[in-house]
Image (tube, rainbow, N blue to C red; front, side, top):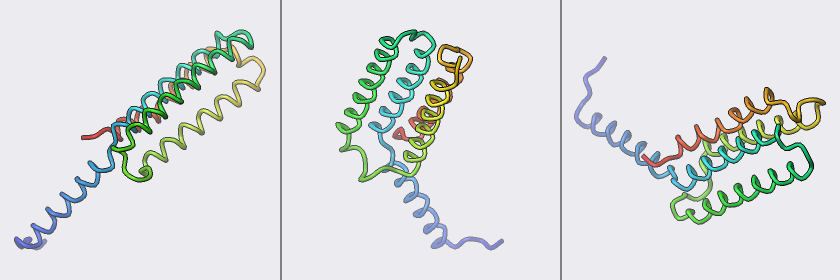
Length: 143
């Protein structure tokens, strides 16, 4: 191992500072708020499925869920001054994971006979659908 020169050490420190500044620039309180709201609303929607015993109940839970997601999106747009142009890769990965769990859970839970009112199906899915959003919100928070 070679001993670093003052110039190489200074270059390495500058590179580390630039990487830290990039993480701070990419962090977004609006994205973290959006993901937290989306995760909570999705979990609540999944937990409401076993008790929604009529078309009216399912419609009501879907309406509340849609309003929560729209409010979260409005908050994200309102905070766009704190969001850099475009979204980070990690935000896209979180949204992809959330969408996959949501689509799989809803499609299986609403088409397989007997799962529509089964807590043992919806409760673990509520955790699974919220997890990517909550982890993503933690990662997106400003430091």
